[in-house]
Amino acid sequence: MARLFPGTREAQEEGAVLGPAKGPVVDGGEGRLALPLGPAPEPLALAQAEADVAPLEPGRALAIADFSPPQVSAGERLIRLAYGLGIPPSTLNPFRKRARPRLTATVESTLAGDPASGTAIRAGHFLLHGVKLPIADTEFSGPRLSPPFERMVHGFGWLRDLAGCAARPQCAPVAERIFAAWLAANPQPGAGPAWAVGNAGHRLLAWLIHAPLLLSSQDRKLRARVLTTFEDTARWLDRHVGRAEDTLAEVAGWTAITAAGLLLAEGRARRLFGEGGLIKALGNLVSDDGGVLSRSPLGQIEAVELLIELRACYAAVRSTPPPQLDAILELLVPPLLTLLHSDGGLGSWQGAGAVSPERIAALMKASGVRTRPLRDARHWGYQRVNAGKAVLQFDAAPPPLARHARDGCASTLAFEFSHGGERLIVNCGGAAFAGGLIPLRLAQGLRATAAHSTLAIDDFNSTAVLINGKLGPGVSEVEVDRRILSGEGAGATRIEASHNGYVSRYGLTHRRILIIRDDGSELRGEDLLVPSGRRGKRGMIGVALRFHLGPHIELAQGRDGLGVTLALPDGSLWQFRSGRDPVTLEESLWSDGMGRPLATRQLVISAKIPRSGESFSWLLKKMR
Image 1 (cartoon, helix red, strand yellow):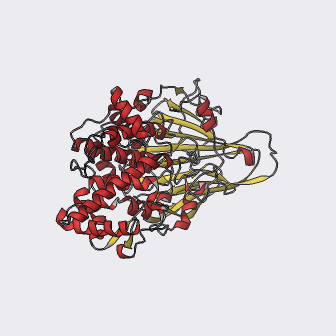
Image 2 (image 1 turned 120 degrees about the horizontal axis):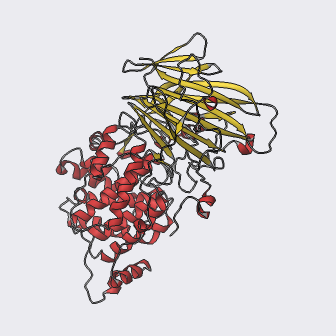
């Protein structure tokens, strides 16, 4: 099984090179940390400072043992091998009478659904991202639904919401009717979104966990048909899980196979088969610090939820899960916490919206993992700085590779910044929610560099954004340097990173330096375009630095055009200052955790610069 470690040939082939920055750094010298409060910031690369290089807090590295198949006896290894080759359990024990399909236990899930969505289902509508879809008009076959609705309808994620909104006698008839309608439209496995491996895996897992909603009928024939459908779907996954559309979908398929081995009769061979495949798939899903290779926080949440649900299946049959599953769950949680803001909600990265603090808190409680966020999730690609009441999140890695990304975004060197319960600088987010209140036609734009708080040249993306949700050529190398600065009066954290996304087209490397005071009251930045390679350096290019603002912020522009005052809903005042070019205000949008687009504004610094490069400095400071 291939594992990706920095410095190996595999890492070089993946094109994700991380290392110390080669550009100007604040090195140890006789100067001191200079953070003046003048009307316009000085270029950070020229600032005199003293840098005490503190060792970075390493994450818990993944070990090969975390992804080794569970230790089993020689006989069980033979059973696993035989089942993987397609030999049914009845052949392994021909003298044993084949049992009818039945469930061996009832699962008590620790994940709660959304009561509002469940109530809407009882009223006859699927509710997702603020959009109601009448169940009676739902096409349960064919590619007629938007991707988010496809995943919910065909993955039966709505069962969790329905189970959480009322007592079982009130919900079971609704679940049975929808199940019957879906089964009538999909009587046999076939093509289309219903039989994508990810959807089939989520569907089988949901059926097994919420089986009481589907098996409450007094009709024995109906119950037998439901159980037969469970078994048929499990057998289909046994044969097709290796053809999953991406690694996360494969993990969903293996999770469902393992759960079926635990909960369906005569499932020992399937369980052994599923456990081995699941742990291998998880090894291909996550990076060395526990972040999923799609770099998506929504993918991270999905992986955590799958393991929580599977752990509940083990508990239902009073069996102990392999220790590798608990180890991987403990590794998945800290990177997710890295992308939480000071309000407890999720940052807007790789298509995600601002998932609510309540949902994140419920997920952490259900996981049972108590830990702290990673400061330097370098393999996953995100840097985090806690400074007083402020939180800085910084994307310091190439975008995910095409085979991992579902809604990949060209967000390299973008950042988000929050203070207290307010978000000041954000990314638009919401590409993964497109198809609800966010129109599908906006999805590609929300994945673009311009939808993130970073620099873009001539409105080109730093990494090509393709219409199928994948990413093309662009950023392949990012260099990162993080240091602790100490000086008279206050300390700070300095992060410098650069990427090569514009080298092939313009011969320029984008380098960004961020310095945040330890009390969180000031964030300084400098964006540099540095010549690289042999491309011609004549002519002019257009550059735009965008700073998308959180919702409900009132703005007042300064007389000189270089500054903007930000009045936050909590009553605090902040000032943004540009070092050389005017700041203009433009419209923007921001997606909340429910997938609802909220109108907001963005600060834009635009300039025409020579192809030989230029630098832009700026300052964000709390005034009261």
